[in-house]
Image (cartoon, rainbow, N blue to C red; front, side, top):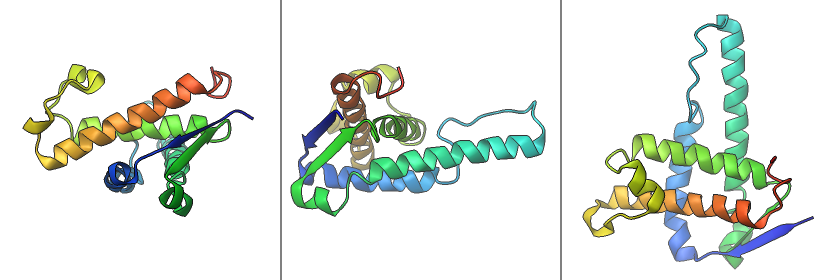
Amino acid sequence: MKRVEVKLSLPVVAPLLDVIRELSSELSKSLAAPQALHDLDQDFRGAWIGELLEGQNQDQRSLLSLFDAQFFTEGVVAFDEKNAEPIVRACTAFRLQLRERRLKALSDEELETGDVDMSGLEEPVRKAFMCYLFLATVQELIIQHLDSSIIGS
């Protein structure tokens, strides 16, 4: 089984985990990418969205499980074929939530290039932006270092 271990700086990552936990709470009852599905029967629509929401919540739990007591002791997270795909999906959901709720003042180009004047941002926006970049980096690590068959390609 292919496995990637990454050592992270606790003082840098710990405040970002607070943002991720807040996002998780926000997303526990709503989809990061809402589905219209107006054409569907109300019961079927409710069941469909319920399944999507449960999947989203499970993905978030997979990501958050990386940051357990062992992480706070050693500062290491590990990605493998079991957790790679759910973690990539969770990162996407969190990044969508950040983009739509906390980073609206930044353009898509600024978000994707990271070319932002950090000193010009207020603290909550700066923290949200750093979290956005952190989650993007996690996604990139998984995609670059794990076999493409692991993430469903």
